Amino acid sequence: VQNNFVDHVKIYFTSGKGGAGAVSWRREKFVPNGGPDGGDGGTGGSIYLRANSQLWTLLDLRYRKFIKAEAGENGGKQRCHGKNGKDIILDVPLGVVVHDDVTGKLIGELTEHGQTLLVAQGGRGGLGNWHFRSSTNQTPEHAQPGEAYLEREVVIELKILADVGLVGFPNAGKSTLLSVLTAAKPEIAAYPFTTLVPNLGIVRYRDDGSFVLADIPGIIEGAAEGRGLGLVFLRHVERNAVLLFLLAADSEDIKKEYKVLLSELAQYAPELLDKPRIVGISKCDLADPRRMASLKRMKFDAPVVLFSSMAQMGLDDLKDMLWVSLQAANTKEDDAYSRWKQGTAADEVAWRP
Ligand SMILES: Nc1nc2c(ncn2[C@@H]2O[C@H](COP(=O)(O)OP(=O)(O)OP(=O)(O)O)[C@@H](O)[C@H]2O)c(=O)[nH]1
Ligand SMILES: [Mg+2]
Image 1 (cartoon, protein in one colour):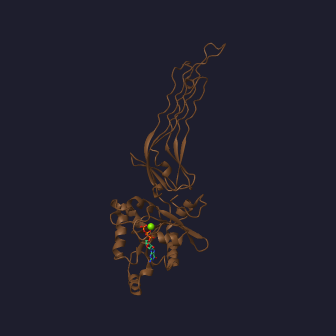
Image 2 (spheres, rainbow, N blue to C red):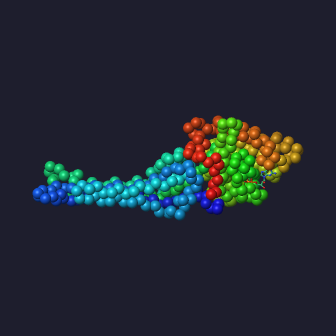
Image 3 (cartoon, protein in one colour):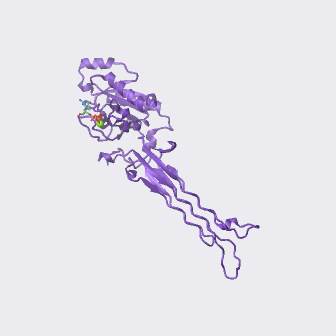
């Protein structure tokens, strides 16, 4: 079931060619030398992507390698306009980023429900010979051909729009935290790589606040070079306003773990380290008072909060901290949550169907 999460597809799009303009002559009773009456060709179909807040993966596009729009029909006699080719509109989730695979150029992003993006423009229809009549040429023998279709290989990527992203080694307790702060019910287990696809949940804060928390698969040393699952999912962290690093209280070397996480993120995309981050020491119920004391003395380059999902300890402090840094990070226009929430009635979103 987890394979149903698809966040990267490559598709070969071909728009419709424009229909040709017609060359034809009026033939009516009692009108001996009827003039030109060739109609225009129809416009070829274009291909658009459209953001739909009810979708959560690119699964629907996974097996569609080639997508082709209809050509416009040729123009006809009696100035008859050729039928336009039908446009194709493909629904995709919010947070989709689209690149031309050959040039690497950004085609656009879709962040709001209903927003559309043109990926392949259909060809214009040619003008019929009727347009070319003039005082010096009453019998134009030519019409325009239709404009050519466009071919384009396009990469469509999904980058989750969540306010806070959880970053941590496998088993750090990321999914457990999501399960206690939100209504989401991710899989939790005592072995690494339990989470294979991202999970989202909405954290309620005080009476009227809320933010989206994203649990992504664990990151290990070498993730940026493709070890584990990390690399595939690091792209989802790019859109988070705040990163919450989880380090387990019972880990052998907390500082080293933190360094590894930072360096994997930096290798993937150095800008990730410019995002506000918070260090969360998880599983503090496992630490005895001496260990707690030493954890409290540890210095990090970011605010630290000690908590335990299991013992429900420190969770309010954690939420306060996240809230404060989100307020600082989010300008009104760039509020990932409001973009994400648009048109979404469901409270929680499961990535797994
Ligand atoms: N004692 C204790 N155990 C915890 C706590 N939080 C999580 N665990 C346990 O740690 C193990 C891993 O928890 P997960 O939430 O699945 O860890 P994860 O970070 O999502 O792991 P991956 O999905 O593999 O990356 C599970 O056995 C949890 O029960 C905690 O606060 N205290
Ligand atoms: Mg997990």
